[in-house]
Length: 194
Image (cartoon, rainbow, N blue to C red; front, side, top):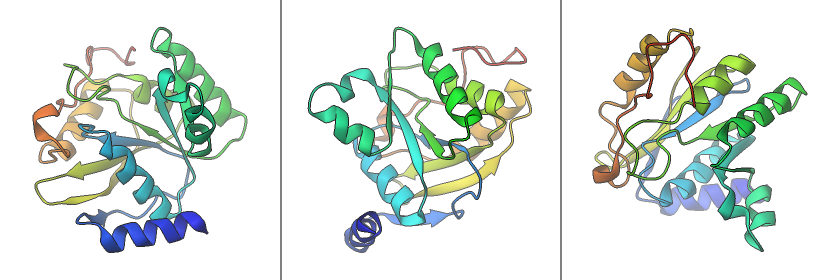
């Protein structure tokens, strides 16, 4: 109830327009891209709360240190140890197989602007859990944000990434100069690697 109120106030006062597809009706991996600013987090919360989505999100372990930890977890955060990224994939797969139902927000372009490739954890999680992928977006050029299509991954990494690239081709992010092109380090294999 409080989340709904906060999101209504936010969208009433915001310069941004919420647009796109409705919230998915089943568990999904929700890509948040282009991830070019910490303000993307505020937009992500506003979108999810406005659409009534139950979600979790992955964040670097340092965000959960000290007094911030309980707040970040209450907001749906799951800490990621960057020294062992495969572990978080296994943890999320275990949660889903254990019956927990949620949308998982992932920012595969990682740290804003310092990566040449997207991280492939979103792909592995989606394939291992059977969850589809919903393409969330932020586009400063049109001042719009929201959800794009929800797609099923086929296991053909190059073809799946071509579909994802086509959707994000005209999405600039909040700070376009930090945008990372949607591509994985190895798109030739039948399964993405971390």
